[in-house]
Length: 278
Image (cartoon, rainbow, N blue to C red; front, top):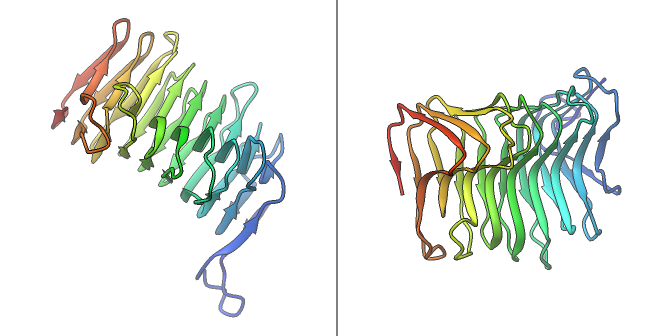
């Protein structure tokens, strides 16, 4: 089944936004068992706001469905996501492509927000832009937050956000992250905290020796206000062929900055990177 939006009713050319405004906390819901043949494309989706959460614009629940060519606007909830994808057995392979994911500015802070939340699934993310700027302040902000999402493939992602967040990352990967790959991402993260480890462009934690994450091949930029790439104990990463890896200290970031942190107990292979700077 394919549901296509954004078309002119006379010419049938895709010209603008078709909107879906959700009344359910799960948003547009892909139930268990839906396959890659189930496609939603060309819509701007507005998640439900003013609820305890978690709430999402799109939920793929044990589903391998696909969402393409449109956008998601995240409304305020105590915990809120643009896309929420889950797999209880790790076999589901949802796909996202050509999506803009942003936060709707409203009064009142939220506890936790992520453009994309993955739990157990093996997604393919292509040309997705989760840009989560947080104002008013938010406790935790992530462009991509993935837990036990081994085999995740992300190419040409643009991830930004984190301003006014206590803890932020462009991409936070945790748990089983084996055979995960980031190819050609643009990552830029900022926040207002003075805590040295409070923000990172890409952060790996609590991996338990599960496998290797690849961050490689001509990435235009990987930056974080405090740390560009942070690999914590028990995690492994290959950082290869990146054009620019750096942390940038701004007026909101008085704490020391670091290009790459590879903690004791972590495994890092760092080769053929054009520039690494603090």
